[in-house]
Length: 393
Image 1 (cartoon, rainbow, N blue to C red):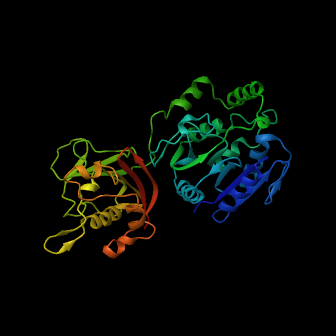
Image 2: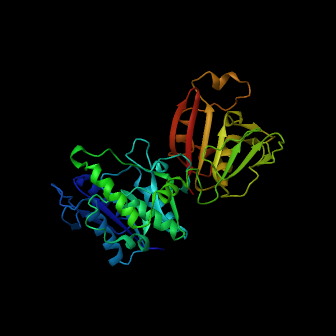
Image 3: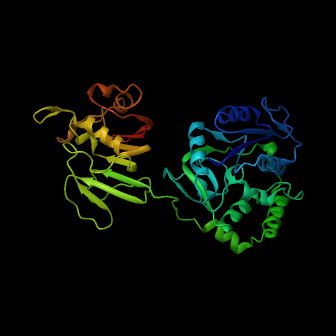
């Protein structure tokens, strides 16, 4: 397994710096670098003079080089991470990619960011990105050390992220953003803002020193303007009809319908999922979607023995999803009239159905449910209950 150092760079966000270190240190070696904050973090490892971003970046890279780490994950202490466990899993996945050079979590839409492609696109996949922002990124130490140490005249450190991404691509590596994990980067505090005029001048000089002229810069910013997926992802839409849903932008789309449907552009299989299993192998799909479908699956039938088709379907969905795969259910639900008015709606879903029976308490086990899901989100879309569940293996 490639070695990874986490470097937390702090100035005046000491409480969050301590929190980040506490949550990340059980998984990786962590060094907390403080730039002489008015109130330093309680868990500071290294204290340096306040030489702004370049000082913190130089020290982080120095630690990665000295410790012979393969990767450096640099994170500014003002970055908010809502799901640290997911971030750690994503970092482990990223360091396992031989072609990956620079990686970043996606950003919540309200974040401060210049790299617009880094905003979350809800693909639940890793995709190509022009360049990553310098406040939170993972990079190979062999790439970042080429800029180390930063010149004294570049006081703001602007352009370091652009050059890092440029060098990675020049050496044949991917630069990627991961929509499977999100972070939030707040607006800069008034007393932390820098004078943009000299910073822009330093930025222009710095990138030109590395041979990045305006034409190369434009290519860097626009090369991945269309989503480029780093790996194949498979999605299956249940009850798809002639227009299967693909909300995650999967590269390989499949569908199942009770009718035989010819579609040259994708695979649509015929199956009656009330009676039949899903006709695919186990651990095959990254995503399974069910739009206006689950309400048509009976809860109990006699054929002639008693069966629970809804339970059986949930078992099949869990079986066919990869570990960590996602199920999306979009169905009219109680107490809305749309859940009842169609005479073919035989399975009335409530807000408690998925959380209580297929996650958390797993009450469906008494009826033969053998899987387990975690409810990630659940909200209303008009009369429809939109539920996103992740399969745990």
